[in-house]
Length: 440
Ligand SMILES: Nc1ncnc2c1ncn2[C@@H]1O[C@H](COP(=O)(O)OP(=O)(O)OP(=O)(O)O)[C@@H](O)[C@H]1O
Ligand SMILES: [Mg+2]
Image (tube, rainbow, N blue to C red):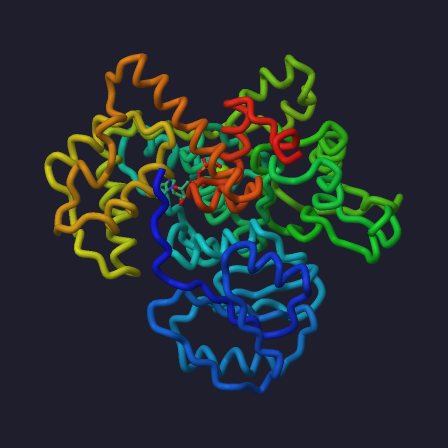
C-alpha cells in the first residue's frame, strides 16, 4: 500500500501557550507548531500551498489573543480557525467563525479531526446543519431518511457498519441535524484508549484521585454537556467503564473519579461499532443492559459495494475536492478506471476509495485517471482463492513491516498506511499480531 506523498506542510499557528504535552501531540500528528505568545502580535507570514490552521487558546481567556486573531483573520480571511477551550463553562466562548472547538486536553484524535476538516475530508459540524454524506443510491437514501427521523429524537443511536463506511460522518450528521447542533460534538475512540485511562477520559477525575492526578480534570461527558458524545468502537469499552456509562444513560449523572458527588450531564449518546455487539454480549464482554440502552435506534451504514453508482459519484467528488487543494493534471476517470471502480469489492469501503482516488490523482500523468493508477487490477471481483490468500498475506506483511518501521507506534503506522488507528488495531487482531508482545 503506497501512501500519498505529503505535498504540503501542515502548520498550526497557536495563539497562546501550548503545554509540553500539547507540543508533543501536535508534533506526533505531523503538524508544525508556530506559537504566537506575544499577543498584539508579530506579523505572521503564511507560505502559499501549506495547510495552515489558526488555533486560539481560550483557556486563559487573554483578550489580547483575540485581537491578534482578528488581525490575522483580516489578513487571511480563508484561514481555518479553531478554538481550544477548557471546560465549556470556563474561559471565553469560542468565536462565532471558528470551525471547530477542541477541548482540553488536546489529544491526537482531535488534531486528526482538525486535519480532516482542514483537508476538506469532512465538512465541519458547526453551521452545516445538514448531512455531508455523498450518495444517491437507494441504500444511502435509506440512511438519509433514518438520519432525518432520528435527529430530532432524544434517544441513543447505535451506528453499525464495516470499516470506512462513514459511521463517524453519519454520527456528525446526526448531531448537525439535531436540536443539539449548537452544542459540542465530542468524539472518542474507545478502542484507542489504554484501558486504565478510559474512565478518567470519559468521566474526569478529582485532584489526587490516583497517582499522577495532579489536578482536577473534566471528562468528555461533562465537556459535551448540551451536545452529543460519539463513542466510537464502543465494543472495546472495558467493563467497569460500561457500568458508569450505563448510569449516565439511565440517570443522566456521573461521578468524577475520586469524588462521590453526582454531576448531572445533558448529553445524547451516539455509539458506533464494527463488531457484532450481540456476539460480545453472548461472550460476556459487553453488558447486555448497556447494549439495550445503546441500541434504541439503529443506523446501519451499508458497505460501498451495495451502493451502486455512488462509487463513481464519490470518486468524482473526492477528485474534485483534491483538485481544489492540489495542482494535479487529473480531472476525471477514463472508461477502464470507471469499470474497475464498479468491479472492485471495496473491502475498505469509502475510506479505501478516497485514498485510492487521491493516490491516483497524484501518480496519474494524464488528464483522465486510468485503471492502472487506481491499482485495482489485482483486486477485482472474481479473484481466485489463491489470489485472495495472497492478499491476506500481503496485508499482514504490510501491517507488520510498517509497525516495525515505526517502532510499533500505532498512530504513526496508521498515518503511513493512511488508515485509522482503529483499523490498525483491527488488522492486528485479524492477523493475530500481539502489539504488546511484539513491542517487547
Ligand atoms: N457518503 C460519504 N460521502 C462523503 N465522504 C464519505 C462518505 N462516507 C464516508 N466518507 C469519508 O470516508 C472516510 C471514512 O469515513 P468514517 O471515518 O466516517 O468511517 P467509519 O465507518 O467511521 O470508519 P472506521 O470503521 O474505520 O472507523 C472519511 O474521510 C469520510 O469523510
Ligand atoms: Mg470511525
